[in-house]
Length: 340
Image 1: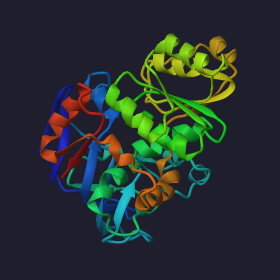
Image 2 (image 1 turned 45 degrees about the vertical axis):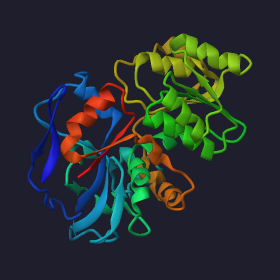
Image 3 (image 1 turned 180 degrees about the vertical axis):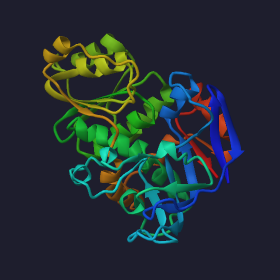
């Protein structure tokens, strides 16, 4: 099969990889019908995260089940499925509490590399969710978003306690931040403040439900949120970047007693205990338990209630993955869908 392999920062190639096989009896093999490039894939691409050698890439996927292991009971050959970026058994106490991304048996799908024509899915029964049928082509981008960025944005909004009567601010205008806006709107937020300097992303934020936009960043951005909220700060703030500046921007934009939902993969973030102590805010986040939300998200997409696939503004064949990475790195694309 063909798959994307990163050899060094900025060096992405599509190469022939071995076809996956059933390793554990709980595995499934899917033929990938769509995959994509994640903002987190840019960390090693930019040299921020070290590579230990040529690395298969990708953790988002949907496709058709071609094989299942002997202990797979609910997922069947021929099912069209969406799965989380973290494989989980969905039966342990952590999973049952709704935190499947921290399952005691979790497997990070980035270790599999799903930017490929085929993929082995560990813990298939607990990881994959079958769609109601074979989706129409127009639904593919939105179902693709459900594998990570929609679920991550949704978890961020839930972790930030977005809901009726709340003002929500979102730090970050990438795919996750934009879909956190969509989620906050679905959860009933009264006011949603986007933080973006890019006209195209501001427009999509408003389409998804943003009522306001702030272009300032850092301390100035937090101060503007307080200006817009009578000096109080937002009830709910999503942090969807993962830097020191963005984390403190989120915390400082939150009113005492408010909630920060942080889902940006943290790089160099350090929180001074005393400074944090006097903010009086709740912090909740980490790798999103996408599997918790998948069934409901799939149904909302299937019913055409939401259209999160609009975050994909560039679609390329898998063979052109390197061009997709470059487009996202140069911010010429918000998110790139790859077609094997």
